[in-house]
Amino acid sequence: MKKIVFTVAVVAVALAIGKVAQQNQVQAQQSNTAGGLFPNDFGPASIDVSSYPKQYQETYKVFLEKCSVCHTIARPINSQFLEMSEAEQAQMKKTQPELFKDPKILQIDPHIWSRYVHRMMDKPGCPVGKDGKRIWQFLVYDSIARKTGKNFAAWEKTREKLVKDFKVQHPARYKELFDEGQ
Ligand code: HEC
Picture 1 (tube, rainbow, N blue to C red):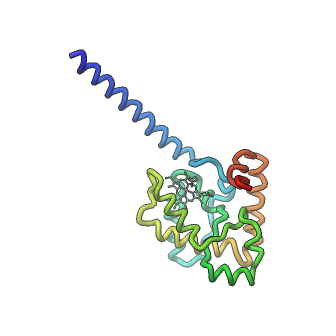
Picture 2: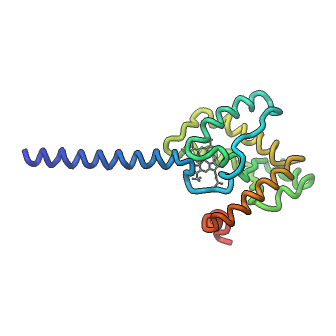
Picture 3: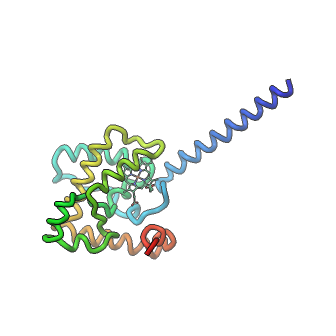
């Protein structure tokens, strides 16, 4: 009998610990800063999509809902990521070489959004699921529309300020994100 009582007690304690761990995880996700802070987090939390094709205006709503579960939606909105194929990059290097001068302003890669959407989808509790593909397509379209061409100057100004302020306010994190291995 004593042994049974003891076993029940051990199981109860184990369950309680499990519950607390689960709650902590949920709290970490709800704190809106999952994975630590990024300069992105302090920028605008919406995009003016009124001039975007209808399909992207629709996906924008899904993006707002699903990509804001663990961190602020400002994190993807103000990200330096720009996805462009090798051929598009070769073309851009001729027409707009300034896009390539600082990876803190624009990090250009043929698969960067695809890689990061998958990375987010692999995280526990991620609600993206079957919407991953259209959110990825939206992000590719949006970053080209909003961060290149005649909009590059405005993007550069916004992003430069975010990075500069972040360096002053969160120096250790800045170093971790941008200075490692340099
Ligand atoms: C389940 C939680 C979760 C969801 C949902 C989520 N993210 Fe994240 N995100 C994180 C964590 C944690 C980090 C911290 C860095 C890392 O682990 O990559 C992060 C970081 C990021 C970064 C910064 C990456 C960098 O290194 O500069 C971007 C951009 C991003 N997320 C975009 C998205 C997009 C787009 C979506 C929706 C498709 C999304 N996130 C949904 C958890 C999540």
